[in-house]
Length: 352
Image (cartoon, rainbow, N blue to C red; front, side):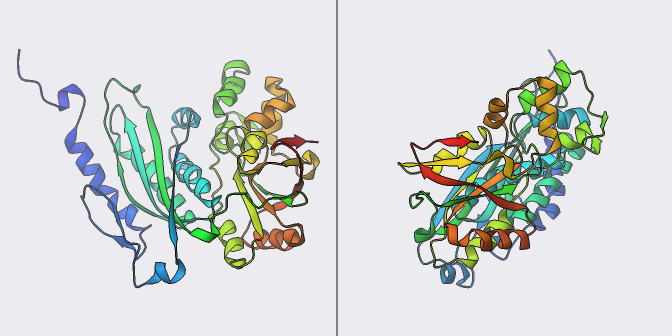
């Protein structure tokens, strides 16, 4: 038997090295002065003590971390051969989970695994991550791009993201101070975000036999364009509100509405003795949700259990401040309104 090289087994080291060198310029676009540059290093470096800035702001800083992926939304990216928006999704799904704790996102890491490195495609993903990190105000300081022949199908890949943020210890938002009478503010989503795509794909592609390039008048775009609409990143809006109320305990709880919808996510921050009553008529869901529901003949209860239904983030606040907080969210470019209130109960969400 003649000698076999690593490349002949499916792994091209030279291509990976060229790719990792090429993306560094894009990563640098997200760097803040706290990033300690280390091109080609084994780890990313981020200083918590740059010109005393962090410790002037935080007396008892607590690090907040989160990890997530994009799920089977990637299957739509493969169908469309469009890979930048899922990079934004990856950042959003991680960053939004740290924002609910009151944290400021600091830096982000990624994991992009594929059967074969295709530089152009992975570069698209990186560009999306860069756009997401810039929107989120965090630095993309490192990642990993393993080539795993025989593990993934050809032309497919998987993504995982990791974010670290920081919050002042006494400003951590856990929901413990929520009481009946508090108001529930909903911030609009951009659409489906990155949850429920196994059901979405079954409805549109398996049952309805639609194609990603089908133009849908109700959506004003093709089906694929709508399904790849990136998850909204709420950093600017949430930080705008929390920075304004540095002293007063105005925002009692925040919930990121992902898989499980409002019934599955809001109870995670409710203390004993509290439930939430949501008025479903207080906001209009995006047209995509009606399409999924009608085409798949999906019960309304299941829709709210799987999808965000047009609300991507929920804030629970003191009733006195609800209007002013909505105004601040709008100043930050978000659509928001009161969608419910806290009532006595056993940590449930009532949809009425």
